[in-house]
Each structure stands twice: as C-alpha cells, then as structure tokens.
Picture 1 (cartoon, rainbow, N blue to C red):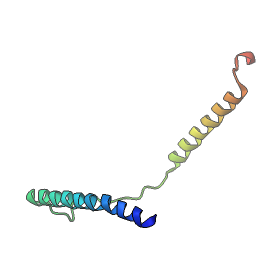
Picture 2 (cartoon, rainbow, N blue to C red):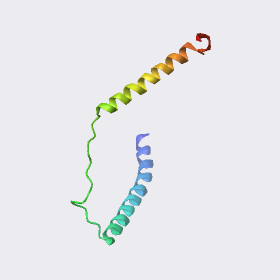
Picture 3 (cartoon, helix red, strand yellow):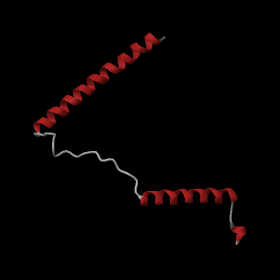
Picture 4 (cartoon, one colour):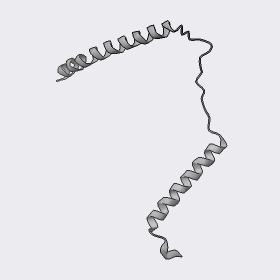
Length: 81
C-alpha cells in the first residue's frame, strides 16, 4: 500500500531531518565562535584535464590488461620455451 509506505518513510525522515538540522546548527555555532568567515581566502574547484602522460599511462595499463587476459586464455606458457 503506497500510503502506508509514505507513513513509514515519514516516521524515519522526520527524526533524520531534525537530527541534520541540529547538527547544522551546532556546526554553524562552532564556526561562528571561531570567527570563521568565508570569502576570498577560500579554495576554488579546478577542472582537471587529461594530459599526454595520462593517455600514455591509460594505454599502457590497457595493454597490460589485454596481454594478461591473452596469456590467461592461452594457459601456462612453459611449453613455449
């Protein structure tokens, strides 16, 4: 029954939300008491791009995986030598 499921979820979500808001309030008070001010000194998110060395490393790992899978498919290589 969907109505019963919503009621059960409400019984779980209300205490969870209250706990989250209490924790947020505690964190805000703690930051304010330490004179934390956001602004110019904050770090910024930088988007990283793949460089040439990254592509070389990806190709090398892929080649090793393919080689390992091929040797696993062949079986023991003792008879080749």
